[in-house]
Length: 180
Image 1 (tube, rainbow, N blue to C red):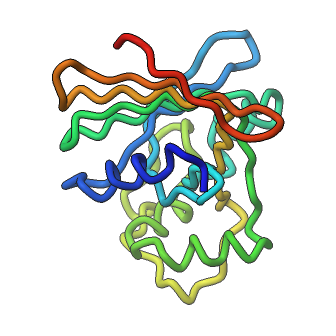
Image 2: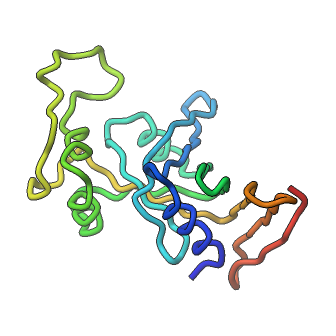
Image 3: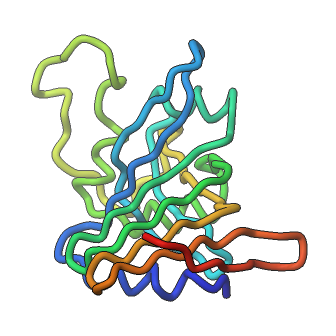
């Protein structure tokens, strides 16, 4: 397991609400774009899993440039993780997509049946309230994986604050404690 994953998971477990990450991409004009996404899990190898709508702007941005940075703030443990690396989108035909789809709540699955994001608002009837888990994975659904190559961990719940930078090297991860 990647060395910082256990601390990341502890932060997720302590959260009273859903764990959130802020994902930064670069748009076609070269401007940074940032948005908040619910974390669906973190794998032993450090990949952070979320899901997104295939029609969203971030999908086009990731297709053009897969380099991203994610910032995660765990308020209950006062811990921040900044993850720099690449993003990958997994389509609805993949077994992993089907697993993540089934794990979502009915109301979360409904988001992928809603009208296309960023278009003028439609009638309220277009916004379904729930989609059951046995419905097929829609074409609008993507699993989003962020694969970090560096992790900047800042613990603000201790004094003095602690900060560690992990960097992935060809033979594994290295860590460097630094001043906060």
